[in-house]
Image (cartoon, rainbow, N blue to C red; front, top):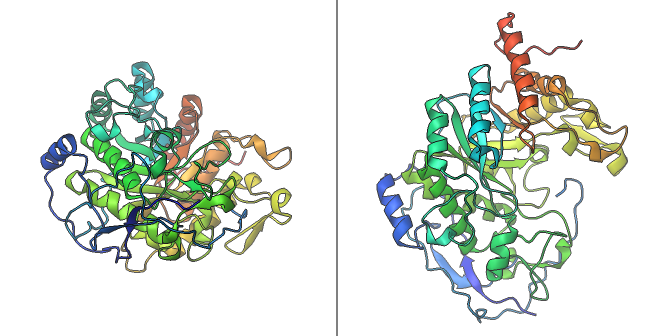
Length: 453
């Protein structure tokens, strides 16, 4: 069954390295409220057309034969009008603080007592940043807003998000809004014409979750609208997660349409990042993007997920690689393990310091010599990966977390974020206490000294 036509992304130069056009944030706010066609596009414009088109190490064969095409639109599907904006793209910015952060999710962000506890955490140690979900893994926008584009998927999980953000900033805390992009079961089901479909025209999922189609301009507009709303309530930074193509499920059945032969996944993701970045130009918010840790190991988009480090470095202010030792292949999974920076790790989860040190050395070697483009700010494993099975994982307490932080500093970086899916305040408190006490005990570099006892 041929896939109906969607709005086509034309090949274009991704406007890298140009200066930011001045936009008034007030104008952005008014346009958001008044119109659904608020955002920006790639400079060469958009035409109607047909869309075409991980786990690391689990590469699957994709059928690249373009299906029969049609210009018919599905019933009830309206192609978004061509966006119009400045031709320029803003240069990268850097935050005013060296981010040492923790992820807390959305539910804790809406709990005044919990927020008080996190403020206390930040007052007593090195942690100075909180990451809060504004669009979570199941597609919920976690705060109420007046944007019509977001009306069907906005929930009041954080009752007064503006008040919460203001309170955090008044206490000297840097605020990051985490926004899950293309993994989105809610909007996909509400708008199947903008979601990934299979070769039979059915809504595709990765085994349980549908995804938005990264080739579809309407999904870009929806995500950018969420990003701008989060910036307008005061977040210092918008962080895009799942900014990639899916890796799990029957990928061989996906039908991206004819565009797959015209534009690579990495080009699409790069242009999408530029699109969101330009939409944020009228605000003070920075833009960061999470990435698979493995993407520094090889040039290009080796994992076939749309994440090319060289492109991403020119498209956002910060790239945040998830360099969790548990996420690199072990010998049970592939018979060998993972080679990182020339070192073979048969069971990476058991060697947190060495894995983080070597992967970050690879990231450092990939940064432009002229220091242009984004900075690297890694996500650090603060969870136990018991799903790997006995002998292939270890319990991650504050000691294992601090070993990774030591590796961050030893590799020449000074920013990091701890990832614990439940936002475990006890673990964060223990880490904060350990690195703070060791710094005060006389670490000459001002970095945490690993306690190997």
